[in-house]
Image 1 (cartoon, helix red, strand yellow):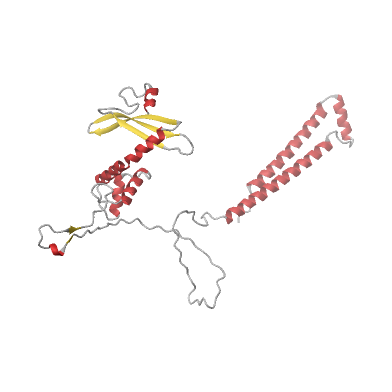
Image 2: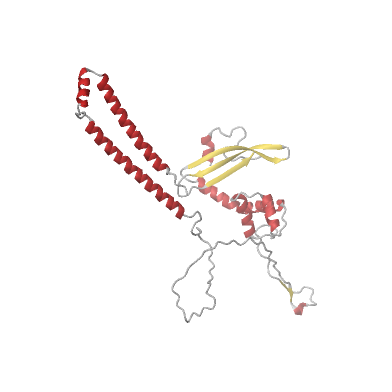
Length: 309
């Protein structure tokens, strides 16, 4: 067991020694003045030698005692605080007592002692243990079968009556993917910044072979479906009383071996209650341009294109 003094104890001892050294230095300086000073000082020294008390001895002694008592009290307080921290650190565990969660499903199961007869015992309490689990994501295929029926009496009729349930509405063209999977693709890409090629590997581990081009087409199709919401959001933000706009130039490589110059504008709704962001971008092409996108004049006449906004 290590019995070495703590840092706080050593610090208190050093402070005490420094105070004692300072007092001795003051006494030495006083005696030197008596020895090498004026005649009156030498006479005072002779009087001191005749067992007469010095002028400041009582003051020095009282100040030294008070200072020593303060240092001793401070050292004891530091030692007690250090001991309290050591006991607290030993008692405190690094592992949290329970998981912090919200909005999660709780599945409860009760464990009873083996051979328990509840008719003979009263329940007087219970202990609960919470264990965090995760179910791996599951991809499945819905097979929708739409039988075709013909009226039996029209068996030999050249124009029989045919009945069949209508096909379900497609989220995007082709009706090959559900809305939940499309939402997950978009969320993984734009919220969790998961590139499409990594999503391809992820779904391959689940048993689905999806080319990156297919995922890219689906994401573009979802963007087209959501475009009316994008336009509505833009109109709502640009109608605010106070609006912040930031313009950023960029190069657009949409043609092999070439790049075009374009601009993007970030519209920020400043009020604290909404604080919504809207992004407007436009590449240089034939036809009209959005505000501030005229070639060579992106920053000229800001009041003119702000008025158009």
